[in-house]
Image (cartoon, rainbow, N blue to C red):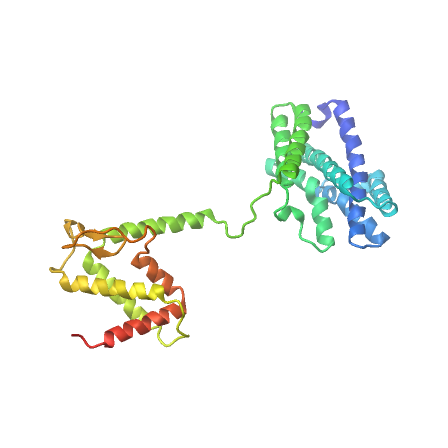
Length: 352
């Protein structure tokens, strides 16, 4: 089904809402210009961008014929008329804000559908049709926000406007695919309007947390688990060699900064290293543990071998492992320097 096959009544309704939308968006743009303290020139320009900016972006990108806002005189007339109304009447208050939001939601929903239909009529690909619908719906507001010195509201943690437009255009494309475009141009805007109003009254917002990175978290979790498994199967001699390498690496970072106040992590690391050295002195035999029996008494969480003593659970469920403590110390230069001093003093201390 093509655009010409849509019921003339639906086309008439779209036409009425389209021109009414230009006028209402002109008033909204003029109201924003008043809030920013602009003069009449600012009123006219902000009204023009708000009412016609999205359609201009769409028509320029499609690049098929003259931009509709320039070829249709009533568009410019209605946009400027809205600016003049906003200049003569000061619209404010809760009632106006709710009317402004719901009117904007209706118009944006219809413009998303008209932008998509125009792209379909020119044979553009599916993704391009969705983009044209979105630009038609929110492009004017983006230009207005940039011109007034702000960040486009569609980029921040505001109520979603792009998602409802995408839902509308997708519905229109699906309906067009199954030759029921007349149903799509009704259902699509209704769905978009419903999502927008839902976001307004329920406080629905998109996640804007800059620290949210599920892939990084998954990788970190996998790394922790793999290191835990590696510690469980790591031979004792290899573990002792790794600790020696760590001490040598720490020695190369000496003589930096000041001694930190909180050195509890350093104390635990030094104690853990001393326990490892004691375990090495008491251990017998050299080689890898192919049978795995040498770890029968080894506790991976406390990094201790409990051979010859009654096993005790860690003092607290959140006891930190040696690997975690080392990572904590190495991330702080002051803690690292303190650990270096402790190890140096320990190595220089005369043995009994």
